[in-house]
Amino acid sequence: VKRPQNSRFRPARPEAALPAPGLPTVVIAGRPNVGKSTLFNRLVGRRQALVADTPGVTRDRKEAEAQVRGRDIRLIDTAGLEEAAPETLFGRMRASSEGAVEQADLVLFCIDARAGITPADEHFALWLRRQGRPVLLVCNKAEGRGGAAAAMESYALGLGDPIAVSAEHGEGIATLMAEIADLLPPPAAIEEEDEPWYDADAEDDPEGEPDDERPAGPLRLAIVGRPNAGKSTLLNRLLGEERMITGPEPGLTRDSVAVMFDDGVGPVQLVDTAGLRRKARVDEALEKMSVSASIEALKMAEVVVLALDANLGVEEQDLQIARLIEREGRACVIVLNKWDAVEDRIATRKAIMDRLSISLAQMRGIEVVSFSALTGAGIHKLMPAVRRAHAVWNRRVATGALNRWFEAALERHAPPLVDGRRLKMRYMTQAKARPPTFVVFGTRAEQTPEDYQRYLVNGLRETFDLPGTPIRLQFRGTK
Ligand code: GDP
Ligand code: GDP
Image 1 (cartoon, rainbow, N blue to C red):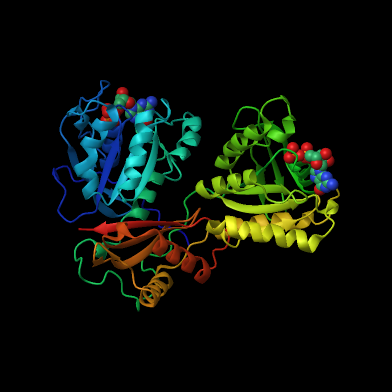
Image 2 (cartoon, rainbow, N blue to C red):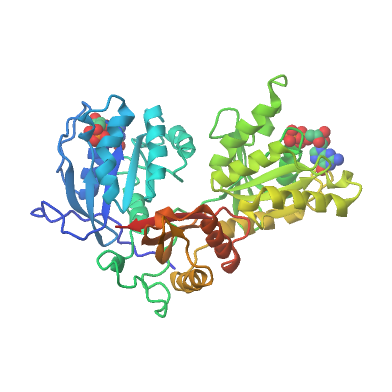
């Protein structure tokens, strides 16, 4: 299903000084000078706020009506508010945004791609994550190819995929608007809190299933794992078996190369194949290096192949890398390499599977493929598993089916009491894929305890066939 192409902004009515009440509220926050006012103007579509080079020039909170994919929103720019008291920059950012974030249906957290991530950004991101409001991470000043490094770095903020834009040059704005629209509460949910927000008997998703707007480029694949797991051997084997589209070319990070091949389904780009540049500095702390190298690689990948030496079993470092993959929200396939050298295959597989299911509960159902990169035996199983993991990671669940399940799940096991009051959950929607991300709406829903969150995630995984992918759950409370 193609998403309607009405995502280009339409300038607000010139006379509309203040937004109408009841509109979903989108708040732009971030430290001074990252371009909040510029972004505000860009989204509103006219020069409403004053933009200046000196931090803190825009003194009043700016509000205006804007439109994203046909929905009117109330947009608030917090720029300039950081003049207020507290000493630290983070303190000022927080003070300036606190009231606004409380009202926000969505926060656009802006960073400056040119300046990179600062400690104030990090503190603020941490604080924002605790506010329980949906947040979109906006990496501004990323015109041209500028700011790719900052975009990578910004994954560490734990706010999901950054959206690279240039507020000044208008790049990436349509994508940003589409993402904003995806995260707004459904139209009916805004006004009447006590009416049911969703009619479970209605047809599936009246708005249609939004497709991911990213271009259908090559599948981006990374191979990670401890030193000696066989990553380079696997890489060479893959490139030997599959049709290479182009030769090695400089990759996105230092010391990496990228190669493209076709696995018969479509193009695949191997990212950060540091292994091709063979062990340059052998005496470097290899253990430590393999984890940090993995971080770089998996940030750029859609699917991550975690290679284990089956003869060594699962070690803490493997689990550490697997948890990183989960935290970064990547699809994953686990490979048991050197299968040719395993003596008792049944016992080995069982031992490894047991260890994984205990230690990686968050990624239940992950595919585990065994083969020998050295001889090539079993290697044909890898790419189909990668494609399946990619498909699950991209999956969108229809809103109707989702809410029929949600209602039943709430009935089977009622949300718990928090401070003696029952949480009221009303509606669930899948805000995003890659990885599947669901938003629960309800009264004080953001207080949902972790075990109940796990109950919902496990139910989603089983009911909608989402094995082996990270699943994100967000909560949006209403007052
Ligand atoms: P605020 O303090 O966060 O509201 O930031 P402003 O919107 O006032 O912008 C701060 C500075 O960054 C101004 O000089 C803008 O012209 C500049 N700026 C804003 N957006 C961009 C952008 O996309 N690219 C570049 N290169 N500069 C930008
Ligand atoms: P990397 O450090 O993860 O890139 O690992 P390499 O690809 O350099 O492999 C490390 C060692 O394991 C080399 O001696 C390889 O020949 C060996 N190796 C890799 N794959 C296999 C395999 O499937 N079976 C066996 N028996 N040895 C393998």
